Amino acid sequence: MRDVAELLGLTPAEVLASGSFYTMLKKKPTGEYLISVCRNVSCAHRGAYKVINALKERLAIEPGAVTDDGRFEFEMAECLATCDGAPTMQINYEDFYDVTPERAVELVDRIERGETVTSARGEALMTQREVSYETALAGARLPGTAGDHKARTVGGESPPEDMKVGDRPKLRDDEGSHGG
Amino acid sequence: MAASQALVVRKRLVEIAEPWKLDAYENSGGYLAAREVVGTSDPEDALELVKASGLRGRGGAGFPTGMKWSFVPKDIFPKYLVINHDEGEPGTFKDREMFELDPHQLLEGMMIAAFAVGASKAFIYCRGEFALGSRRMDQAIRSAYDKGYLGTGIFGSSFDFDVVLHRGAGAYICGEESALLDSLEGHRGQPRLKPPFPAVKGLYGQPTVVNNTETLSTLPHIFNHGVEWFRQWGTEKSPGVKVFSVSGHVNKPGNYEVPLGTKLSDVLELAGGMLDGNDFKAVIPGGISAPLLTTTDIAMDFETLQGEGTMLGSGAIVFMDHTTCMVKNALIAAEFYEHESCGKCTPCREGTWWQVKVLERIEHGEGRQEDLDLLLDMCNRMDGRCFCPLGDTAAWAVRSNLQLFREDFQAHIDEGRCTYETDHMLVGARSGDTGLGDAGVTPQPSAGIGTDSETGS
Image 1 (cartoon, rainbow over the protein chains, first blue to last red):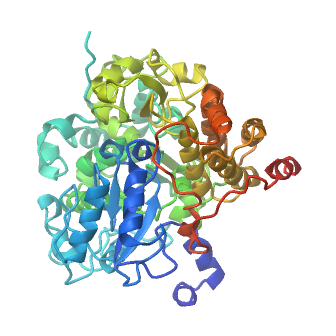
Image 2 (cartoon, rainbow over the protein chains, first blue to last red):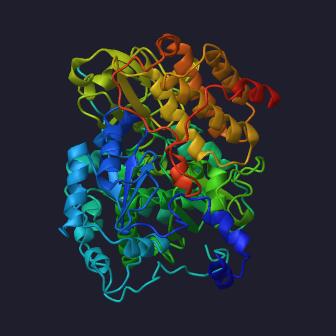
Image 3 (spheres, each protein chain N blue to C red):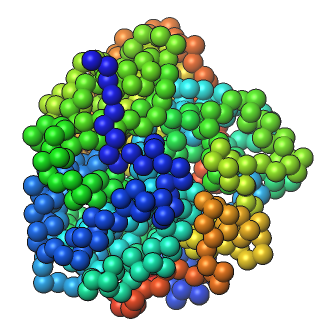
């Protein structure tokens, strides 16, 4: 908090005020793979809690905790807006639909064995480091990483070759944007 | 007559391959409306056309879009357009679909809206969890800039328009428009006192129009085909078509676009009927915030549902069959609101917490007879006393389960257990989220909740 505050010219309390408010801003190190299982209405009525209990057993941790080796974190998420694929979950914010307890455990097994896992939408999983980079700067990719490579193939459209970190659509003038 | 869809906003999604690409969008009539509006018409005419169409906001409140725009003062600059793509109302998955698959449709709607209200800068507030959507929109914005559809003098006109994509970080309350603006400015996403409304004093204190993704995605079609065409569907007060997200115990969950005023039973038919032919028990007609209905014989439009004491909301329809435990259903809702309460006002912050405690012990067979009236009393005391709709709807959601299915709650108390074969829910699992305590808080039946609740009144 102090470091961020210094960078932004704020007090640590102001940084913590925003930082503590949002689910996706983690205050402690996350697992390399963050598994978020939706627990809300459509998923819960179609077996989400079976998935949650299976993962709890497989990973031997409670929701909100990280495995001892730091590889997995598991959380109960609120509605992920993919209720037509209920029960649904995300791994590092990529979607998996119609998840069964068996499939959830199998996905963990596969990640643990180092296999490539792709989401229901065909996206390859990024690591948490790449994810935090992307979420912090909408559209940016950590250069020279799998995320960077993948970004060039998503949707079949290549971003400009000169795309750089922090590169956002240029505002004509900065007046009024207040750094937003 | 068999139920059928009226595809407008979802047409490309259904009929075109890779509709998110600029070429595909333009080859199917994309950007014609914006090009014409921005190039040849007057902002006032554009505003009047939207007013005449009767388009109502598709985010949840159903406020007439044209009227919202007309509240923006003409002589104060800069003005901003903000897109509320923080889709989080449980059961809703329509905005996410059209944003991922047809981002240019939204961009085109944004151009028209911005032109009409005189905003030359727009911010898209995309929910944090939507990784693919944000990538697709990012690509769409870049390709639009490359073609000169965004930036200085778009489509060769004198109208400048810039778009910034902003990703949220996981907070349901940021779907409330003033909380969204605070979040966009970098603060905690807590609702602001209204008035002043965002139209007068919004983002960075400037006049701001906040519109939902589906609302603006509808605009290009209205401008291409006209008001009469749009009003061929729906009712006088709820014109046009609407995308309904259908989920829960149905055979074919999915998004279905139908005229407003379509019978709920027809929507159920489109979604393949009740799962495995099970008996219908209840339905959430407009997202988890909307009180339940126990019939499907009802017209899905804003005014009819309001007349029935519920709401069309975001258009999220969740069907539940006879195997559904309504105590569990209420607890799911209560846990959601407890987690998402922003903490600004006391009735919501405390009320949602106590709702969970009481519901947990009923669901786990430790409920007391007086808990039922206690729960009802809590809901009544929250309703209308919260700072923003989040707390009020938390009261509605729990109360409608209890009022319509009191026998389910009574059976839990009488038998000292959940009377349904339902999946075991994790008690107190939410505390793990904060990283502040251990999971597994067991509710204490003798905690004297009644006394505390009364002192809080």
